[in-house]
Image 1 (cartoon, rainbow over the protein chains, first blue to last red):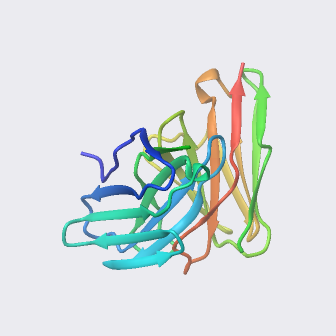
Image 2 (cartoon, each protein chain N blue to C red):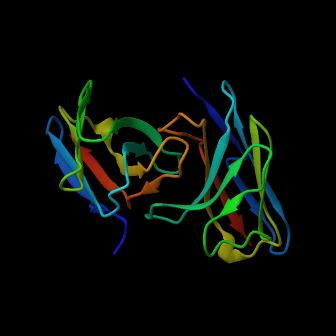
Length: 111
Length: 115
């Protein structure tokens, strides 16, 4: 069993839809949770990071962490074609520690 | 914001030669740098962690004599793929951060093709 599980997709949605991306994990020591966006042939770009359980909102993006269920989510509201990319969840046990990544979910937002 | 520059963005080399990839933090001092490898449609696989001034810590299964990592300053780390073979062809990405940084900044990646 992988430490971090993420559905690889692909996930295809119409423009304007609400997108829900999820990851589950098995390591209870993870404290910091991140979502990265990666366009083809580019390095990942940090979208959101949260500490422990709770919600965090930034513009059209909302990150949720439920440590009791070992489940994290990223919601994208009013999705745009420019949101089409691979979204990777990542986790670490502490600042300065290595990140453990999910496999990434490929998202396509269609006109 | 934090910027990490990675060069070259792509490189083609002959089998048996060595290739050096540079990763620079442009506007901050990176105490820790990570090197990843990514195969098509797969996630990032951590190869090694390097802290400035000390030896890199390699992940299990990564040959440290083949993938040489140097982190001589707080703004520069290099990955050298020695005696490259076609199976080393991949996308290599670095990331940099500080001890208090939880969301590391990534470079733009280097696509290595060994022919």
